[in-house]
Length: 294
Length: 318
Image (tube, rainbow over the protein chains, first blue to last red):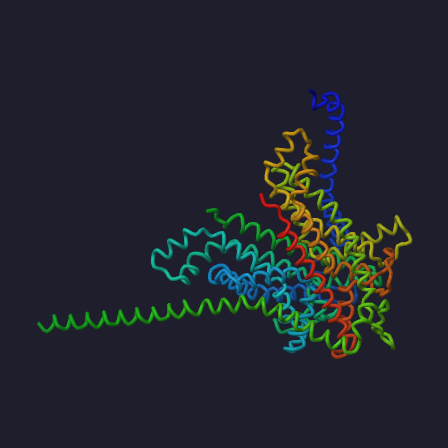
């Protein structure tokens, strides 16, 4: 009895192998497609913007005149926003993560908070903008100052920091904390002296990635009502401000009116991407250098 | 003799002091041990407060809006003219814009993301994967405003050089760029789902003479289907909530149509336009902001819950 017709199988084999190989190429192309677009995007931004970057552009004040416009105000605005976002998200993020991982009893409350954080991570950033507009700008009457923008962005990236910190804390091996308890340390002492130092690289990596997300966010800031042309430099967190992505937004929108604005937007994008590149590289270095494998 | 009793005395005093100090310290420790969890709980509660804040602000202002504009009119109206003398607030033009851009984005991101996932999980060697995956993630880390710039100054002119009927602001170009932005997300989530299919199943298929392609489509993908579908749903949710790309590249035309060559406004772009225009607090336009945001919030929340439900409920356990 012949269950398998060898000649039939062999006849079809070449076709099947050809199909397999051609699909393999197709899948590879699909994977590379995104990278090609990335390359085109960066090349386009560089050709449009690179020649516009000089010291006057970096250090100058904003202006409607494309040839005299500079982005120092936007750089400082982004800097002051970071000054708000970094400590707020670190403190609240680490605190929440410690509570959820080490104090909360596994049960309703803990899983409720956890689900809630997962849902918050999926809320569109523009909705956070509306929250910020309603609470910080209007109800607390901050106006559109750095603090209002920074707190809004903090709420936006908080879920990222919490989840990263939770993972970092979870990856600290049990025997370290058991040894600490064995020496007579209390729970808080163990957390403070053993668990947090061991989890710190992971937490910092997550926090930096969250920070870079916050820096690039535009939608919440547009809702808060950042002005298009703000000449004075912000000197602290209580000043009105503009930020790098906002400047990109306005210049791109108006590039149909003044052609050079597209170049200004591209040059600002180069600065923004450079900043993000530095931040992300720092995160990767921290992760590779300080993260211990137990 | 006196000296010795003095010595005893001082010793006793010192020890008593030490005990006192130790007690004090212990009190502090005890206090910390009790206070710290409370403090940390308050931090964790901020995320709950955020949710409550979002729902409360959206809901209360939306209710105000529905007092002026009936709910039926809002959800079935095909005309959106918030700035005119006789303003009309139909949300359907915005929904059309959001649906159209999301469909275009998913037509790009779905197939390409899935194919990339297949390549990374089934075909790529470990070395290749370790290079390609982080590079793809760079794509996900680029701010959306940069994609907006790219759509407006590069993709739109490119499309118009091929298809001249396309307008300077249109929904096609931001839809495509949004899709490119979502590729890494779908690729990485689908890849996770596919890598978690146990090797023994692949090996079973290969041992029966299947090619890699056949084992992928007949064994791995069916087994990972729940995770793949969940990644698609999350991708849709992301597309619905995406703001800057459509705001920049699709303009603000509020026509109720599905014409991809024309400018269409999405819900997110409407929120940017209205809030950026400094709508006076208390006006109907101002409240319409919240009604649209509420609609957007509910849509994305449902999508996210659906994704989690699918990946949990239909997961095949091995």
